[in-house]
Amino acid sequence: MDDSNAAEVSVMERNDVNGTGPGVTVCIANQKGGVGKTTTAVSLAAGLALLGARVLVIDLDPQGNASTGLGCRVEEGDPSTYGVLVDGDAVADAVRPTEVDGLWLLPSSLDLAGAEVELVPAFSREMRLRRALEPVVAHYDIILIDCPPSLGLLTINALVAADQVLVPIQCEYYALEGLSQLMRTVELVSDNLNRELELGGVVLTMFDGRTNLAQQVVDEVRAYFGARAYQTVIPRTVRLSEAPSFGQPITTFDPSSRGARSYQRLAREVAERLALPVSHDEMSALDRLLGDKQQANAAEQVQPEQNVAVRLVDGADDTPVVDPPEQEVRP
Ligand SMILES: Nc1ncnc2c1ncn2[C@@H]1O[C@H](COP(=O)(O)OP(=O)(O)OP(=O)(O)O)[C@@H](O)[C@H]1O
Ligand SMILES: [Mg+2]
Image 1 (tube, rainbow, N blue to C red):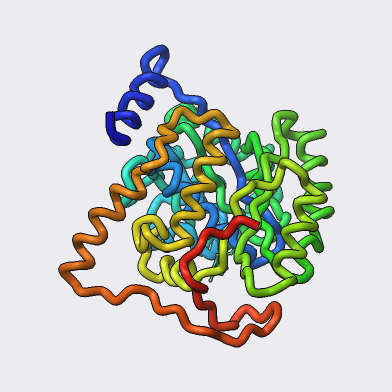
Image 2 (image 1 turned 120 degrees about the vertical axis):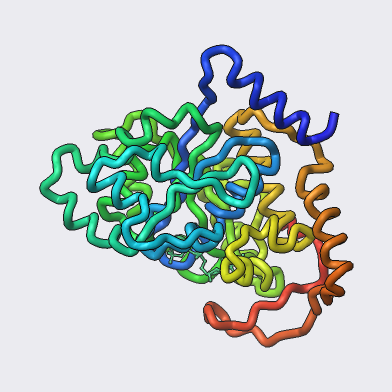
């Protein structure tokens, strides 16, 4: 049986009793900006969809990066997270399909920035997203919520709606700074608003094997979080930074890249940890996709990625990012 059949069967199996799936909700949070929350939300979601899971991404950031990263343009007045949170619109009416099979999106728009203020006097303002999701949560195997870089009301709504928090940590200096504040917030929410909430795991992002610093951060995070840290470490690669501007997740944009393979590996780890009913076939759907892509590329005579030596400036975000020679990153 190939992957697609396995995926179809698992979808049927989990829907055959009462039409519901497990519906695990995971919020991807870190109040630090630019640590890879959105990249992880989009790429992990696409990876899980490739394994056969039914995935919903909720863009809860007014920047709307997850929406554009999944190729979605939101016009004024379009249904979005703002309408769901502030006007009580139905999630089902605001969800859109994406170009990835099995992956849906609840997009965000700039007006979401006002929601933090508009919701202040609202009744049960922290429960808005949770209540809105209740009717649809069983339609998906997993819901991933991409949070903004703050611990404001939007992130609190995500934490209240979630079963688990996934924390991306960038492999750079100050990586652990602010984490205790995030952990305290998670604890407060689980004590007062959502008893189910737990730390689902941390994922190390933008690892650059050429710096000692990156390895030190990996060691420190592993020492601190133990088994909560996912084995898969996401490398810093050019292709991952390019994919959003093409409105495609990395698994579609460049399925053979190290970034795609790493996120696919992370998807398998997440699916295993959450016991999602997916296909764990090593020859994943990513390889099938890769086959299709190679045929398309052959027609276009696309040049492969070039490996160029670069200077590294510690911590500088505008450092040119260049993939080292293709290799597995297993620190
Ligand atoms: N592994 C990676 N390799 C190279 N670039 C990356 C990687 N992960 C993310 N980036 C890039 O780094 C920038 C920040 O990533 P991303 O938007 O995912 O972070 P974020 O935590 O969602 O940011 P924000 O806090 O602003 O929402 C983006 O330009 C993204 O394309
Ligand atoms: Mg983001």
